[in-house]
Structures are given as structure tokens and as C-alpha cells.
Amino acid sequence: MGRHWGGFVSSFYIIISGVVLLSVILGGIRIVIGPTHADRMLAVQFFGTSGTAIALLLSGALDRPALRDLALVLVALASVTTAAFTRDNFQRSSS
Image (tube, rainbow, N blue to C red; front, side, top):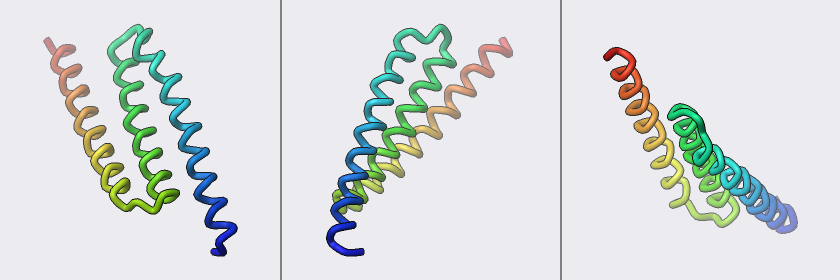
């Protein structure tokens, strides 16, 4: 890729990161007004997914491989959080 396209792609990644960040801010409303715990949990999962997307986009735009590691950590935390939430809800419904 030439210099022109490389700069364009980096700028595009940064712009898309901003759009994803805006959607995270709007998703914060769901955490506040979510009528159930499941709605709030889905919003938290959305934060984890969006954070992963932002980290991967910025990793490509800024050429920072450490942000890929951050994305892996966010994915691992999201998986553990989902498992814990599901287990907790299953135990509540069984009681």
C-alpha cells in the first residue's frame, strides 16, 4: 500500500473508532434505564465488544500491537462475565 492509502486507512480507523465510542456512550443509557438485570448485562457485554473493536481499530491505525493484547483481555473478561452472570441467574431461578 502506498503512503496515501496508508494515511487514509489510519484516518478511517480513527473515525470508525469514534463512531463506535459514540455508540458506547448511547449504550450507557441502557445501563441506567435497563428494566431488568439482563438488559444491563447485555449493555455491559456491548461495552466489552465495543472496547475490543476500538482497541483493534486503534491498533491498526496507530501501529500499536499492545492494543491487540488489550483486545484479547477484553474478550476474555467478557466471556468470564457472561458465564458468571448466566450461572448466577440459573441459581436464582432454581431456588
